[in-house]
Length: 445
Image (cartoon, rainbow, N blue to C red):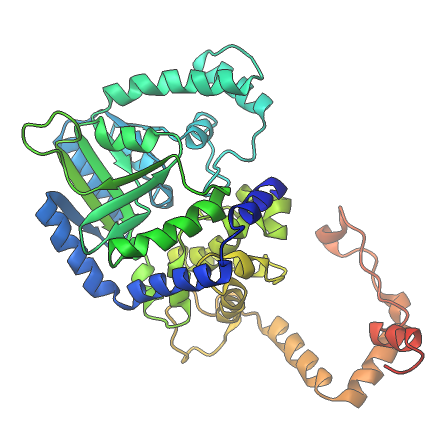
């Protein structure tokens, strides 16, 4: 991750980064404040351009829409560009159940698909694998030579995928920005697989969350500058695709049909809350993951969710509910690094605190858009924290309790169940940090 952080820093040299971040945040916030109107405008202009628009309330409905479109065209082979929304709704699994083969064409996604795993990073899906592991995997799954040679491995993958592009009946892609004013779908990529996915098969299906809409083409420029630099440290990606409809009649290049599937899947609920709404500003750059001490230590798979890292901790509770994700907001040191590097200034640490409060809030009369509100509240734990707050609000009582704990620390258990099976139990100090600082400063503190 150090390399990515260094590239990001270098890519923003010569830019007024804070001004650009403020502009990016304003562009995203303005779009979200006009979301219903912009979505209607997007639908109207897409339809006028020949792009057929479909709406999906949740992931299951989106899978059904896409599967039916594939079946209408007797599709048996589908090629996919990178799309986190398709991961979110487990599209590949759904298509396989309908007898439709879906092959990932992004190299990282292709690798994790061969390994029958899920992505561990939203930008670099196979970052958890080294060259040797990838070589062994491709040798076992595709018959390549067992060489630890990166150019050879990428060339072998390219040759295998190129044939699949030509055989595909349908291409499925994500969307980075959907421009309401022109009905244009923007796709950012480096490998060329996105362009092949959206132009070679006779049918192109784009799938995206409803929050990806922006007002006009002028809004794309600052977001693109922020996205590429924050994600991979590039000034611009190798390819930037702008799709405004199917191929005109009489033309040979491009798909005959283009469909856009707009997925809600809990986003409307987030949008109703003025504070949580800021989560939807995300442009999926992954910078928060690259700078997160927790993510860099445990990796993406430890989260057990589609979106890992800091953005996953504030997004997944809305998509799946706190009943399934109640521990995610607590998997943070609240160091603030994620908020400092977010290109659209999402206040991730503050939103994590909000979700922690939502998880333990016992006020059933307190309305909340977060599913699973209060699911983590435990009466005993709540009582302990209430007593802790009560004691800390009374200095004399606090000092008495601290002195008592220091004198009785020999009674502290050395084993704490499974927690100490692989860890050393923490031991209470003989005096407080405040007392040590006072001694160091000669009693002035």
